[in-house]
Image (cartoon, rainbow, N blue to C red; front, side, top):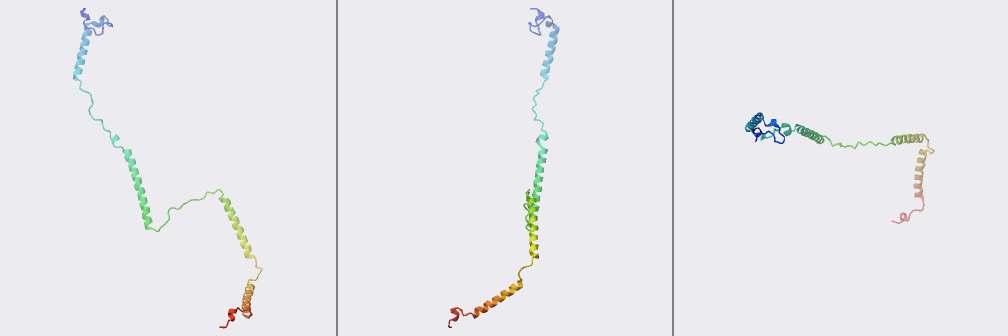
Length: 170
């Protein structure tokens, strides 16, 4: 075969006459040697070190802060309860849970007006009764009553209709 065709950088199917030159052979051989040297110098690149530990992944400050707020709130509520218990033991007994319910009736005003009207009428009737003079003289009636009692007692003594048990011989 042809000596220029001993070295082909590319397959014969796609090659042309310029690819088989010695210059190309020298360039390719130089690249090959350079590549071979680099391969021998290369060190392994597998990273066997542990990953970098970031403090914000390990120590979560927002979680600690919210936990501290929760603990502070619980301590505050406990302190309030202790103060209430101490006040209850110290002072007299009191009811501190009044049911502060106010009725919200739509008919309240009408009922209040009706109550005021009835109260005014009752006061007017009472005043008229107080102003009215009685038809009967009370002193005269009491005097007549006492006289009737005295006469009744005397008539009982004078009567002949005494019971048999009073007339029985003793």
